[in-house]
Image: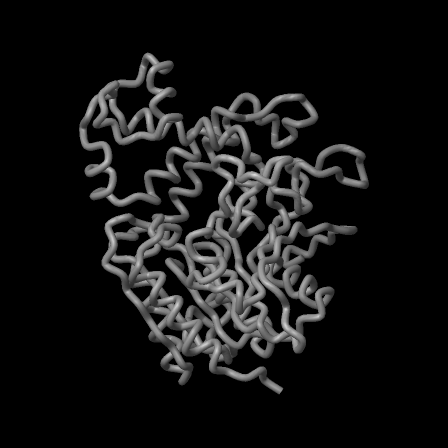
Length: 376
């Protein structure tokens, strides 16, 4: 790994959609963001084959038959990254050297480590070159890194709501969230599983902080404003959130209730050490660092064609950061398409079903990705 550590062995959980064609040229790798997973599209089903509630893949609106990334044409690969908590080897797994959960002893992971592991996965699958790599937010950073680490293996890169590195403000938000976790009395230096505890309080606060940054001020004002929690039909929350309001007596405002609901839900399914690892990977990513801070010099290795998408109200990964990448790529003579979507939803817009955004991605796949040949 980039830190110099070595994992004795590891497993990656993978979910695929569509059919790999005979010459293995139609593969599209999807890289996930902080709290997502390999479950990119479709639903989980019960024993009778019926969709389970709230089990949609995180990019379900984007990927599937006849959707922007059409799985009738493309073989889409979703992979859960090392260090995550959705099945791939991570802090909750057993350290073979101790027989105990890895916990805080799990090696530091970087975006580059994830890309290397994904490349080895493709080797196992017999896929020499990807039609495209795509991802949003932290997934966009992995996409960018793919074009630098394995330039010959990527024909197209779709980078959505992302950046070439984090601003100081973004790193600060991540650090406050991490401090909430590590100062939780149940954290036990990261070895909480050995102690039979979970740092839920810290995870709740970390998620609440993060969630604030994913939404725009306009969306929060429109959805919640200064409204107090009510039981009338104008309540913007869904049934689960509404039920939560009725049982939380110290919550007065709807926005408070919403954030607590999101925090509680998150703390039940996400691992604290995973949160620490992945936010650090976000902080560390900076391909320009090894080139004297020059992003143009860093991107000189890239050979792929690019589509970059940003959203006007995304202040966490602002359009200015996408334009930095566009400028650096153009300075290197790369083929770049750029779409800046006027959307009110903040950073979360990359997960939502915006027709203009999806049409931009659809058009790129239909007219650009589909029109390129496998490099020899």
